[in-house]
Image 1 (cartoon, rainbow, N blue to C red):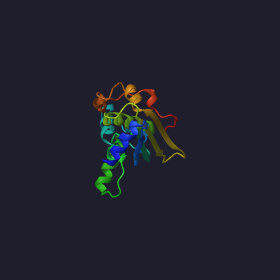
Image 2 (cartoon, helix red, strand yellow; image 1 turned 90 degrees about the vertical axis):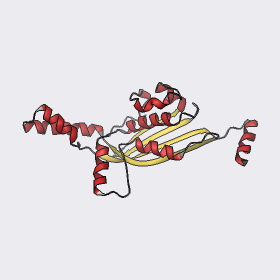
Image 3 (spheres, one colour; image 1 turned 90 degrees about the horizontal axis):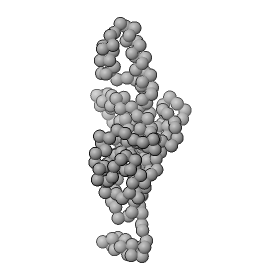
Image 4 (cartoon, rainbow, N blue to C red; image 1 turned 180 degrees about the horizontal axis):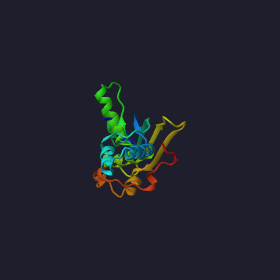
Length: 208
């Protein structure tokens, strides 16, 4: 109650308090580009064995295709008027679900296989993770105003390259809503939306 009274007094005096809340989550990302190259190599090897096109497609659809993977670090922060509540666990969940797979401290062997399979069936560039986080932020924070400032960063610690792949987007929540073609009431349908504009891509064009 004391805090609410202080905030009300600040508003009467023209003082606006803004707060920023965010999180960094570690996950796994797998490279789509390398996976496509490996798929073509597998296709050629199967052709040399005399396999038909139908057999090849069936095999490639069920066998996980190799690619290089890396530990990814996703970051989201939201700055907004102090009167709004932002559940930290919601931000953590958005980041974790936006990468190829989550990481875990302890896993039994069947669980290791499950996580590896999931990651390799869900390859993503760093900019893909940023786009996914943007979609989920708009979808999950329908109650926040358009002037909320959203910062999204994805850092992939490359395994076969000597650089890190970095994607970043800073925008007002209203900008993200307009770019995604929705307003706060329509945001709930974003889970089925695949398209994004070029503005959603990372600022630095570094590929995995």
